[in-house]
Length: 246
Image (cartoon, rainbow, N blue to C red; front, side, top):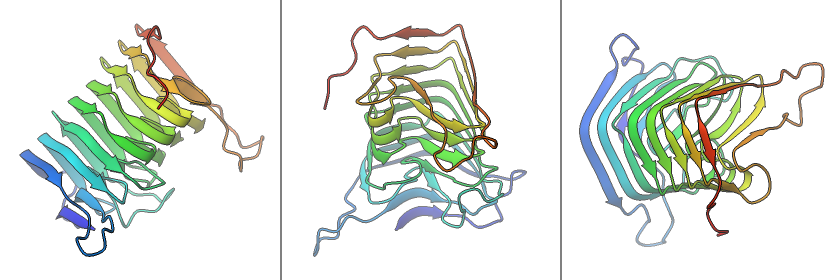
C-alpha cells in the first residue's frame, strides 16, 4: 500500500489535518518484476481522524484497493467511529479502483463517518464496486459537484448505503454507468436521500435502476426493515441520450 499521508488520532475534528494545492498524477502502481498491481491511497486515516482537502487533484492512477482519495484501514463496517472528511475543489479523474468492496474513492466504513464534498469535479473514473463511497450510517453531502462519466461494475456509481443520510445540492449527475446495480445510488434500509436543485441526466444501469435503487438487504428480517426516505425537489431528470452499453 502506498499512502501519501498516514494519519493517527492527533488529527481531531477541532484541529483537522489540512492539505491544499496538491496534485498527484500518472502513478504506476505495478511491480516491475511481477506486474502485480499495488494499492494506492492519498490519505490513510485513523478511525477518529479529521481531514480537510482544498484544491487537490488526482488523475491517471490505478489501484488494487478502494479508498483512493481517503481510506480508514483500522475502521470496520458498522463500528462506531468519527472519521471526518471535507473536500473543496477536489478533482478526481481517470482513477481506477480494482477492489471489490466499499468505496473506490472514499472508503470510510464505520457508522459515524462524515464526508462533505463541494465545488468539485469527479469524472471518468472506474471502480469494481461503489465508485464514490459506501457505508453504514455515513453522512455524505455533495454540493455543487460535477459527477459525470463514471463507471462501477456493481453497487452504485455514487455508492451503496445502509442507514445514514445522503444530501445532494446544486449538482450534476450525468452519464454514469453501473453494470449490476443502480446507476447512481443503492439504498438498502433506513437511509435518507435528500436531493435539491440537481440535474440528473443519461445515467444507465445494465440490469436494475437507471437512477436510484431501493432494495432491502437480503439478510435483514421484515420486522427489522426500515424503508429509506427519499426527498427530491427542484431537480431535473433527463434520459434522452443514455450512455451506450460497454
